[in-house]
Image (cartoon, rainbow, N blue to C red; front, side, top):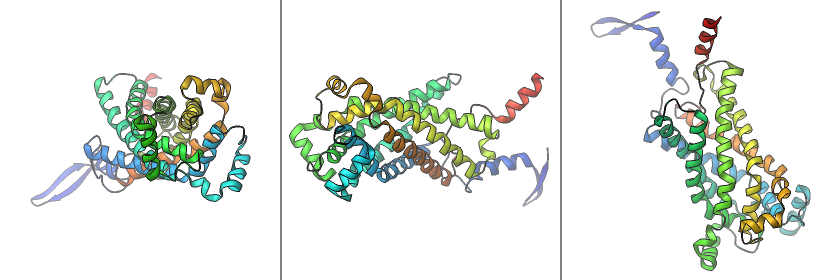
Length: 338
């Protein structure tokens, strides 16, 4: 083991160079941690990171979301993406594509804060219950627990957003949409779509987080074959983007049926989930608006993870994703087995 001399007031002492390397590697990303992992400050950063990443990315894709919602609610009138775009532009003007932006920004900001912040919290809690348990179960339970709370917070914003986007004369945004729904329908109107919203977002969140975690693990272990700490910031964020895109694309396919039901219920095209399924048609639940949803969700989730992990990096924290075993340990195990 290499040694280095360290000057003190009374002379010199020796210190292992490996110890110095470990101390440097823990803070080499930016130059120092804002806080330690799994502390209240850490969960606060994750919450703020989730809020900013989700709110800004959903705001940016509001025009695509307007197209998706209108294709779901008015499938006969808007039979394709191009038809929907040209018709809305001709009938309502360019401003139509930004309808509901306040619901997107604030609603999904709140959801992102709960989704990412609480996921990190529950992952630590469930990991501590049994250290040797299956990691996939931890990912499933953590994402599901966080998502239930996140959707309770999101639901009123989503109800107004969908109504504003599909009904041009209903309201301009949150400020007049909230009181109008509450005055006419009460709290039930704001939470009419909670069950199908959970039906959409629970499977999506479970698949999204699990896919992300396993993809990160696969990329470091089998493609890069280096520990996360040994990779540059660009490499770490590259892994984040690849895992994020895989997670968003697979999650959007799984959750598409419930997304169609949410749009139908919030626009009163059906009074119950059963009637919505019957009216839309079983096959259409999976295929209607799916191409545009993949176009929308895949990049959005990628950008969310990128922004989220960038915020963590600039706080001196490691990027997201569990790596099951050190690469060095794998290599040592292989050499011993030969």
